[in-house]
Each structure stands twice: as structure tokens, then as C-alpha cells.
Length: 193
Image (cartoon, rainbow, N blue to C red; front, side):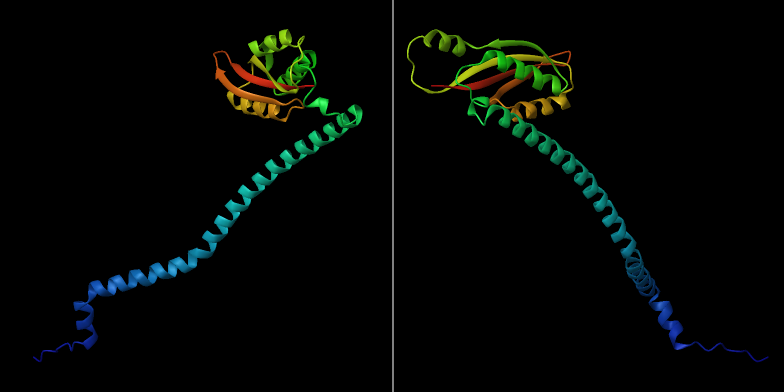
């Protein structure tokens, strides 16, 4: 009986000896091909996500632009009524009635309630000294106000509203109390002539 001998092909030896190398080569080829196949959809997905973020920012900036336009319109109307008098921002006296009305309006517009207002010592001293001729110049009017209602997030809007108000105001400090109440130390200014 004649034995048939299987003749080994030269490439079989190479495959047996370098099986791991061939396997690694196949994995690399599949990985590179997968990268090029998935790269375009991934880029489209990132571009879509970025465009959605930009659309959200655009809507936010458009809303801010509308608010600024309304403020400019209100300023022009008020300036036309007052004849462009600088007394609107820096009155010649402490003008407490108008200051209190403005504080109340700004506070309620921001969604808060003005609970208390106290005028600091410098204002009382200024009133007592005002009978004697004092040099002209900008005078501070320290205020301490308490507001209630609104959330902490709304507090940022309230501070921005005070910043945008007609009268020159600075918020020196604020404290957070319980029951959605906040205490603000502010300074209003007037120009003594």
C-alpha cells in the first residue's frame, strides 16, 4: 500500500510560524478601515452637536439683544421727556422719594419684594451739614435694603437690574438669609452743587 504523502505548501509553514503576527496585522487592517468608515459619521455627529449649542447661544443672545433694545428705547423716551438732564443718573440732592420709587420698581420687576430700606449714617450727617456750605462734589448715600421672594438664581438678575438702573448705584455686599430673603448693602450717589 502506497502511502500518499501530503506535500506541504511553503506558505503553510509561514502561516503556522507567524500566526500571531498575521492576526495582529488583520486586527490593524480592520481597525484602520473601521476608523475611515466611522470617521465621517462621527464628524457629522460632532458638527450637529456644536450647531445645536450655537443655536442655543444664538437664542440667548437674541433675547439679550431685545432687552438691550428695550432699555435703549426706554432711555431715549425718558431722555426726551427730561430734556437730557444729567439729574436722572446723578441728582443734585439725595432725592430719596424718587430713589425709593426706583428701588421698588427695579426690585418688583426682578420678581422680588422690597421688605425694608434703611439709610446709612453718611446720609444723616450730610443732611445735618447741608445747612452749612459744603464743597460741591459727588456724595455717597449708603443704603441697606432687604428683599424677599425670588430664588438665588433670580438674585443675579436683581443685581444686574440694579446695575442697569437709571440712578448710579453700587452693590457693596449682600447676604443670604432664610426664607428666600436677601440683605444688600448699597450706595447711591448724588452730586451736591
